[in-house]
Image (cartoon, rainbow, N blue to C red):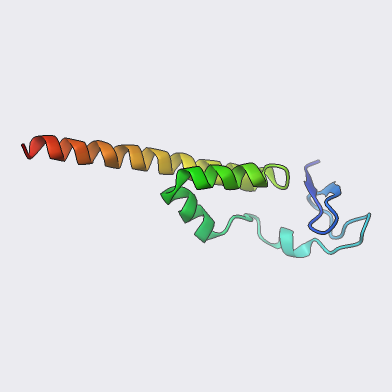
Amino acid sequence: MALIRCKECGELISRTAISCPKCGASQSETFGNTENSSVGTCILSLLLPFVGLIIAATKMSEDIKTARAYCIWAGIGFIFWISTIDVYYLLKYIAR
């Protein structure tokens, strides 16, 4: 059983819980989406990989699937930036 933190009180509850057994807060908004990461923050993670890793670290205790998504986007971002820099220097070398 996967556990996440209640969005109101922070208590560990089941991912499938409709409401928190401790405080009674509805959890339906959080679980309505299968992927909690927004498109904007995924793009931010792609363009600024260190920001993506920081976001992933803050989400790690709340939802491991969301944190993993940010890590994947940050990894793709690192690969993108490294290859972009390589191409830049290659073109600069060829232009000599």
